[in-house]
Image 1 (cartoon, one colour):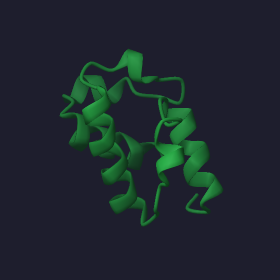
Image 2 (cartoon, rainbow, N blue to C red):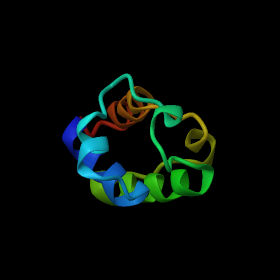
Image 3 (cartoon, rainbow, N blue to C red):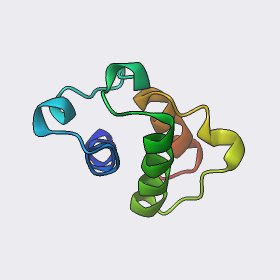
Image 4 (tube, helix red, strand yellow):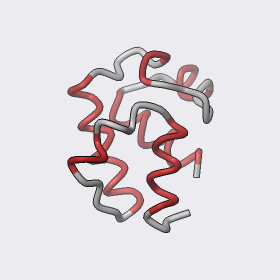
Length: 79
């Protein structure tokens, strides 16, 4: 699952390969250049498309780290 999340992040946040390679479960928005509030929405859309889920408005703000994204996706049963 982390590889799919990395791909989503690379696409939505326009990350280079070196930055993507450093993404792990402890990565937060503060650790990633370009993970702004606007880019966050792009990331959410990319996650929805890739994993075939719907992320509610109330969940969007809580997805500020890779571990939070993984937890959300697990709750939706995609992992």
